Length: 348
Image (tube, rainbow, N blue to C red; front, top):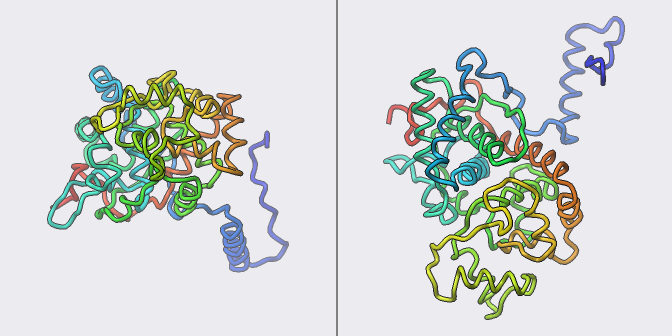
């Protein structure tokens, strides 16, 4: 649409204002029924949300993240994962950042997060810097969204304009956190979990899984594939033998489950499309990774092949999927709050 003008049809001549409003409501309801009205609150987010109240927000976050990366090469992948784990549990509300308290059972100690999700001190440092620059303005939920965006960019990945304006929740949900997508999930389980939060169970699933193109993983999430896949006492048959041997050196039978290995053996700290090439070579590190290609009749296999052949296509889809994920059940307007400390609800 080169002109950029609205394509909405003109109102019928003589239609009363109240009638026009009724038609608009009916059209909106129809659009929602067809899937165009994706998530409540998402329409209130906009990339320019802090332009007047905290115009340097992206610059501040970038500065803190680059400094953190000097001491921790894993931090960009870890912060991207924090945003994911936040949004999949009662929406993108910063609930994963809340510590235990008299009224909060922290999501940090859910099985998928405990001794695994990380980067909380860096989020604290970002929040402190923003509170100094523009007190009480930027939410912790938005900090996670911005940090994920900048982390991907600084690792060589795509750029996108992240919609902002999320408010912070005042509750946590450890039960939902225990049901996050798991490295041991089969394709059916993964599709169900993505669909349950309103994401596309094929393209969004494959694109967002591509975040495993950087970062590290603990041996406890890899060892079952090597020695006792699905309780069979044998390795996962979908795993390339040479790569299995390499993983076995890093994660020996009965070894330290907390030992770390690269998720992507080719370019472990770069955000690129080699993740999909690895799947094509049966070198996906996690069961949930390889399932996207190797599950019988996988509807995701063609997308894996497309992303393996075109990094541009992957980057474009990843950016779109990150925006969609960042819109899950957001709090806006007078909902929730802007926490002064990301770890605690205001006034507690």
